[in-house]
Length: 283
Image (cartoon, rainbow, N blue to C red; front, side):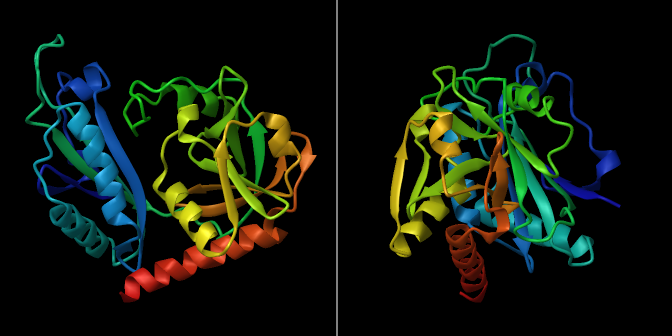
């Protein structure tokens, strides 16, 4: 049985109701965060909530719950699921209003915390990277938010039979490598870590930011910028990242083979990431 938390109440998934007049449905006005738990704790939880708050503020959507109230809801949903760690999505939609772009603020949003079981995949299992034909679209704001407007990602997803063993990689209309359908992308060449710049229009991933930080702590040089596909195809190692799957090595990008799970730098960074999770729980 799947439990959810909606507007302060715990409900079974089949009991959730939302009005068709919610502007999240009518106009796609809403934002979300996805994360997972480790022994009941969310890694980088404050960072996820801060990113969400920035998006809500820009679009004048009130957030009626504190970070601690959301954290408590995560813990309660975990308890209702036999204390098993889970995959969570915190969703804030604009709320119910008349048809038309009338409100100057959204003060009564619908806030829903979903939980589902984590995918049964061994940590660090490699995937194949596929260059997408769908170009990465431009964000609606100066920085891309994790919004309900996900059609570009869906269009890219439709190019692949499954995301279990593959990840689609977007390229911008100008030909620069952007990001994955559900991830940020990194590669290593001669011991230097590279990743597309935020200015390419990618999502400023929470895990992405943390990976850059631990790479610098490990003494690696880090370079963000604008890169064509050919640069990635000449890399020594390539991996993707997100909050649920952590760091995932690629064993191939396009037609180019890669070391996958045997990548020395990828493994080094992933070990540091896992250690940071353990340190946060203890701290």
